[in-house]
Length: 198
Image (cartoon, rainbow, N blue to C red; front, top):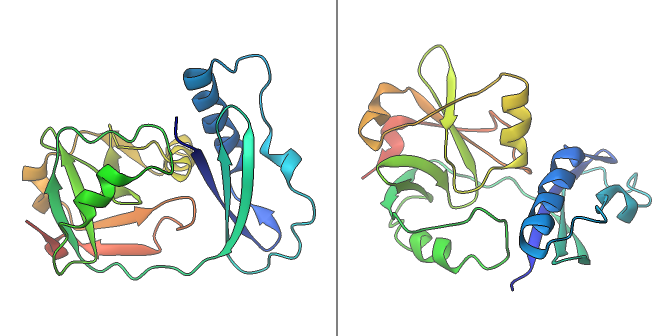
């Protein structure tokens, strides 16, 4: 079985949304490895975080137990356009390092910066971000993303997003799309829907 990963944002000596990462990692361990008895606590693996002033990507690689931790500098990507890519078979419900199926879809982006994956006629995620669309009043996120991200869970818990089935045929009902994940804050990357191409 492949390695699974939690990607955490560290900035100004603080880990963002650590409780959501703990929950997802332990849910994955319980489901795939039957690791019910001992929960991992990511906090145990950190010592002095004050050295991380700039936005830093921390990757925790694990199977039944944590196997490796990496710290990498992070630069916000420039995403200004998306290509709709249809695939009803793609499955990425567990965050693992094997991304071959998503990489194959990403290769179809053409001249755009990233893809927006459509599954069973509904929007899901980009190649590495959850999404939300703005209708002029509310931000709506797909009810069934490929991966239930930690930032997505945080925003839903605070009622900043609401879930809905977003049909690919209704994209033009929205004004813009926001891309976000553990490393990218909600609102940092927003794209007008006319920059989503078929």
